[in-house]
Length: 471
Image 1 (tube, rainbow, N blue to C red):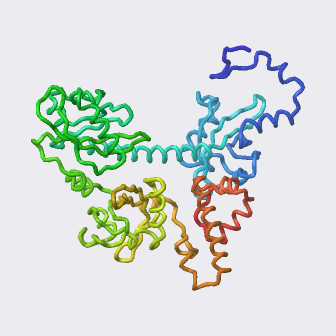
Image 2 (cartoon, rainbow, N blue to C red):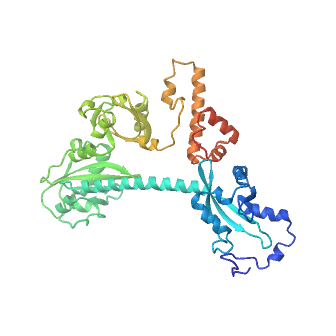
Image 3 (cartoon, helix red, strand yellow):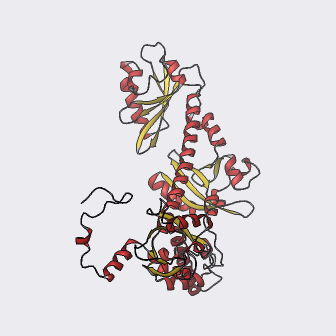
């Protein structure tokens, strides 16, 4: 192979005459078909005289026959067409992307023009870039979503670090497996006369006198079984006098950690049930939070939850059953409660919030169960209404959820309810396929296992034909 390009960046065959000897016109056409999705025959007046396409999805290109090639593309693409047809332009031998107009949408196509030496015709070979464009749009949406989540995570982490470091009493976090200190606040460093940041990575037991280390290990093991155990009095290494340590466990990324408060008698250390700084965070956090007892009566709620359910004040909600607000009465909360008893936590549970004015808001719920003598249940409720409003809107009178279907019981015969549920599932699957393919009906039909004619029929039956026009 001759690696020296003769034109542009091409690396030609070393002996092209031998390679193509015996090729018929049909063979040459097959090569051309493999090169692109569109092949346009352009005359000396820049008019499209004939077209060949690879698949049926490109049949709309037949509308260009008899038109000037520049009239089939958008305004900003016309100069590129002129350059492709200009024999003296330096970009003639490279691929150029232009946008055709079809059904109100732009169809991006990558073109290269070939002009035979002994002919006045131009042959334009084009590659459909719609699939690439769809992938780029999905990538952009995913990247934007990740950036929003990352920003939210960074803001949360910043608030946590500020809160943790500004607590007035000594507190530290240690790994439950190897007792290594992961983080300690400024008050803890000051108590131990340590330089800021110097405690991270040290052993928790190294902070106390040797004679008390076994007691600390036994205390931590006991707290793991019963969190109501009283704080332990110990003496810190190299210091006189006693301090009290109180530990509580939490899990993160599959590992268990200990949050340890140190009461040196100089600071007011809040009790676990009335920890004011935690209450302040819960009260000011942007996501709704509510704490209930085993009967799901509200014990604590923050202002965000009061706003979500349209309550005049938080106090108005105390003692009210959470069943009043979350999903279907005794159904969604019942499912959450069962999951919590089996797994202790639940993430991103989809439901709705029913406010006091009769309105509904789609939400995601994350929950945790705290095992005490009487179990407590904490729920973080995040509205996803804006996210759903960003999706393509649909019209129609079909039931839109299981809740709406179950409301038909007693009003319609079971046969009709089953038929409507079938229509609902079919409609939701079609809508999901259309969203998944960024409104490309041909791709949606393929992933649904339908012919395009069947998909069009179902789109018309469900009133979805006006949603999408991309093929």
